[in-house]
Length: 195
Image 1: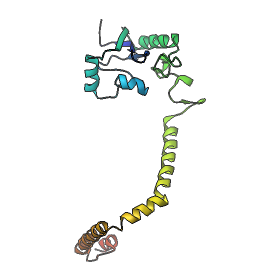
Image 2 (image 1 turned 30 degrees about the horizontal axis):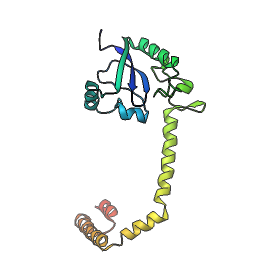
Image 3 (image 1 turned 45 degrees about the vertical axis):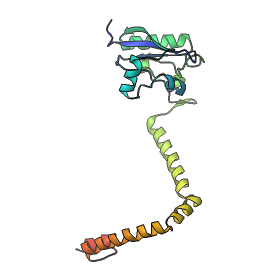
Protein backbone atom coordinates (compact mmCIF):
# COMPACT_ATOMS: atom_id res chain seq x y z
CA UNK A 1 0.00 0.00 0.00
CA UNK A 2 1.50 3.34 -1.09
CA UNK A 3 1.24 5.80 1.82
CA UNK A 4 1.84 8.75 -0.53
CA UNK A 5 -1.55 8.25 -2.16
CA UNK A 6 -4.66 10.17 -1.15
CA UNK A 7 -6.80 8.66 1.56
CA UNK A 8 -10.10 8.96 3.42
CA UNK A 9 -9.97 8.97 7.21
CA UNK A 10 -12.26 9.14 10.22
CA UNK A 11 -11.21 10.81 13.47
CA UNK A 12 -13.04 9.73 16.62
CA UNK A 13 -12.90 11.56 19.98
CA UNK A 14 -14.02 9.30 22.79
CA UNK A 15 -14.56 12.18 25.27
CA UNK A 16 -17.27 13.72 23.08
CA UNK A 17 -18.36 10.55 21.22
CA UNK A 18 -18.02 12.53 17.99
CA UNK A 19 -16.34 11.78 14.66
CA UNK A 20 -14.98 13.69 11.69
CA UNK A 21 -14.83 12.27 8.15
CA UNK A 22 -12.29 13.78 5.76
CA UNK A 23 -9.80 13.14 3.00
CA UNK A 24 -6.20 14.09 2.26
CA UNK A 25 -4.17 14.30 -0.94
CA UNK A 26 -1.49 12.31 0.89
CA UNK A 27 0.51 14.97 2.72
CA UNK A 28 2.47 13.17 5.46
CA UNK A 29 1.44 15.25 8.49
CA UNK A 30 -2.04 16.34 7.40
CA UNK A 31 -4.59 16.19 10.23
CA UNK A 32 -7.88 17.80 9.11
CA UNK A 33 -9.47 20.99 7.80
CA UNK A 34 -12.39 21.23 10.23
CA UNK A 35 -13.04 24.69 11.67
CA UNK A 36 -14.97 23.30 14.64
CA UNK A 37 -13.29 24.78 17.74
CA UNK A 38 -14.06 21.82 19.98
CA UNK A 39 -12.57 19.35 17.49
CA UNK A 40 -9.52 21.59 16.95
CA UNK A 41 -8.93 21.56 20.72
CA UNK A 42 -8.47 17.76 20.49
CA UNK A 43 -6.78 17.38 17.09
CA UNK A 44 -4.46 20.11 15.71
CA UNK A 45 -5.79 21.95 12.65
CA UNK A 46 -3.97 21.50 9.30
CA UNK A 47 -2.43 24.99 9.51
CA UNK A 48 -0.86 24.44 12.92
CA UNK A 49 2.96 24.17 12.81
CA UNK A 50 4.18 20.97 11.14
CA UNK A 51 6.27 19.94 14.16
CA UNK A 52 3.15 20.15 16.38
CA UNK A 53 1.10 17.99 13.98
CA UNK A 54 4.01 15.57 13.52
CA UNK A 55 4.38 15.13 17.28
CA UNK A 56 0.61 14.68 17.65
CA UNK A 57 0.39 12.06 14.87
CA UNK A 58 3.39 10.11 16.18
CA UNK A 59 1.85 9.93 19.65
CA UNK A 60 -1.94 10.31 19.38
CA UNK A 61 -3.42 10.73 22.87
CA UNK A 62 -5.51 7.98 24.42
CA UNK A 63 -9.19 8.35 23.54
CA UNK A 64 -8.52 9.86 20.09
CA UNK A 65 -8.25 7.62 17.05
CA UNK A 66 -7.73 8.11 13.32
CA UNK A 67 -8.78 5.29 11.05
CA UNK A 68 -7.66 5.31 7.42
CA UNK A 69 -10.62 3.92 5.47
CA UNK A 70 -8.99 3.61 2.05
CA UNK A 71 -6.08 4.82 -0.09
CA UNK A 72 -6.45 5.74 -3.77
CA UNK A 73 -6.52 8.51 -6.39
CA UNK A 74 -7.76 11.84 -5.02
CA UNK A 75 -10.90 12.01 -7.20
CA UNK A 76 -11.94 8.54 -6.01
CA UNK A 77 -11.23 9.46 -2.41
CA UNK A 78 -13.41 12.59 -2.72
CA UNK A 79 -16.25 10.42 -4.02
CA UNK A 80 -15.80 8.02 -1.10
CA UNK A 81 -15.63 10.92 1.39
CA UNK A 82 -18.84 12.35 -0.10
CA UNK A 83 -20.56 8.95 0.08
CA UNK A 84 -19.58 8.36 3.73
CA UNK A 85 -20.57 11.87 4.81
CA UNK A 86 -23.91 11.64 3.00
CA UNK A 87 -24.74 8.23 4.53
CA UNK A 88 -24.52 9.67 8.06
CA UNK A 89 -25.70 13.25 7.25
CA UNK A 90 -22.40 14.44 8.71
CA UNK A 91 -23.17 18.16 8.27
CA UNK A 92 -26.32 18.02 10.44
CA UNK A 93 -25.63 14.97 12.58
CA UNK A 94 -24.71 16.02 16.17
CA UNK A 95 -22.32 13.06 16.39
CA UNK A 96 -20.06 14.55 13.69
CA UNK A 97 -17.81 17.61 13.61
CA UNK A 98 -18.30 18.09 9.84
CA UNK A 99 -20.03 21.36 8.93
CA UNK A 100 -20.42 20.64 5.20
CA UNK A 101 -20.63 17.60 2.97
CA UNK A 102 -17.80 17.30 0.47
CA UNK A 103 -18.68 17.55 -3.21
CA UNK A 104 -16.22 15.64 -5.38
CA UNK A 105 -16.85 17.98 -8.35
CA UNK A 106 -15.51 20.98 -6.40
CA UNK A 107 -12.52 19.31 -4.78
CA UNK A 108 -14.12 18.96 -1.38
CA UNK A 109 -15.72 22.35 -0.70
CA UNK A 110 -19.30 21.58 -1.63
CA UNK A 111 -21.72 23.62 -3.71
CA UNK A 112 -24.86 25.65 -3.03
CA UNK A 113 -25.84 25.32 0.64
CA UNK A 114 -22.96 22.91 1.26
CA UNK A 115 -20.35 25.49 0.16
CA UNK A 116 -18.61 27.28 3.04
CA UNK A 117 -19.32 30.70 1.44
CA UNK A 118 -23.04 30.02 0.99
CA UNK A 119 -24.98 32.74 2.83
CA UNK A 120 -28.78 32.43 2.80
CA UNK A 121 -29.26 31.72 -0.88
CA UNK A 122 -26.18 33.37 -2.37
CA UNK A 123 -22.60 32.26 -2.65
CA UNK A 124 -20.35 35.23 -1.93
CA UNK A 125 -17.36 35.83 -4.11
CA UNK A 126 -14.16 36.75 -2.24
CA UNK A 127 -13.78 40.20 -3.85
CA UNK A 128 -17.29 41.30 -2.78
CA UNK A 129 -16.87 39.77 0.66
CA UNK A 130 -13.52 41.53 1.19
CA UNK A 131 -14.96 44.86 0.03
CA UNK A 132 -17.87 44.53 2.47
CA UNK A 133 -15.54 43.60 5.35
CA UNK A 134 -13.25 46.56 4.47
CA UNK A 135 -16.23 48.95 4.52
CA UNK A 136 -17.38 47.58 7.88
CA UNK A 137 -13.89 47.84 9.37
CA UNK A 138 -13.47 51.38 8.03
CA UNK A 139 -16.78 52.41 9.66
CA UNK A 140 -15.72 50.79 12.96
CA UNK A 141 -12.38 52.66 12.90
CA UNK A 142 -14.09 55.94 12.09
CA UNK A 143 -16.34 55.52 15.13
CA UNK A 144 -13.31 54.54 17.25
CA UNK A 145 -11.15 57.50 16.22
CA UNK A 146 -14.02 59.99 16.57
CA UNK A 147 -15.06 58.75 20.00
CA UNK A 148 -15.15 61.81 22.32
CA UNK A 149 -13.97 59.80 25.36
CA UNK A 150 -10.96 58.48 23.42
CA UNK A 151 -10.10 61.96 22.17
CA UNK A 152 -10.34 63.39 25.71
CA UNK A 153 -8.20 60.57 27.09
CA UNK A 154 -5.57 61.12 24.38
CA UNK A 155 -5.55 64.87 25.01
CA UNK A 156 -5.16 64.30 28.76
CA UNK A 157 -2.24 61.90 28.18
CA UNK A 158 -0.44 64.61 26.18
CA UNK A 159 -0.74 67.02 29.12
CA UNK A 160 1.35 64.98 31.55
CA UNK A 161 4.70 66.50 32.59
CA UNK A 162 6.60 63.55 31.14
CA UNK A 163 4.86 63.86 27.73
CA UNK A 164 5.34 67.63 27.61
CA UNK A 165 9.09 67.24 28.26
CA UNK A 166 9.32 64.46 25.66
CA UNK A 167 7.51 66.55 23.00
CA UNK A 168 9.63 69.62 23.81
CA UNK A 169 12.85 67.63 23.37
CA UNK A 170 11.68 66.04 20.08
CA UNK A 171 10.51 69.39 18.69
CA UNK A 172 13.87 71.01 19.55
CA UNK A 173 15.74 68.17 17.79
CA UNK A 174 13.49 68.42 14.72
CA UNK A 175 13.93 72.20 14.51
CA UNK A 176 17.73 71.91 14.87
CA UNK A 177 17.85 69.33 12.07
CA UNK A 178 15.65 71.51 9.82
CA UNK A 179 17.81 74.58 10.54
CA UNK A 180 20.99 72.68 9.69
CA UNK A 181 19.60 71.31 6.43
CA UNK A 182 17.62 74.31 5.10
CA UNK A 183 18.35 77.32 7.27
CA UNK A 184 14.72 77.38 8.45
CA UNK A 185 13.31 75.83 11.61
CA UNK A 186 9.73 75.58 10.25
CA UNK A 187 8.41 75.03 6.74
CA UNK A 188 11.04 72.32 6.21
CA UNK A 189 9.53 70.76 3.05
CA UNK A 190 8.98 74.13 1.36
CA UNK A 191 12.46 75.41 2.24
CA UNK A 192 14.03 72.20 0.93
CA UNK A 193 12.53 72.83 -2.51
CA UNK A 194 13.97 76.37 -2.60
CA UNK A 195 17.53 75.05 -2.65
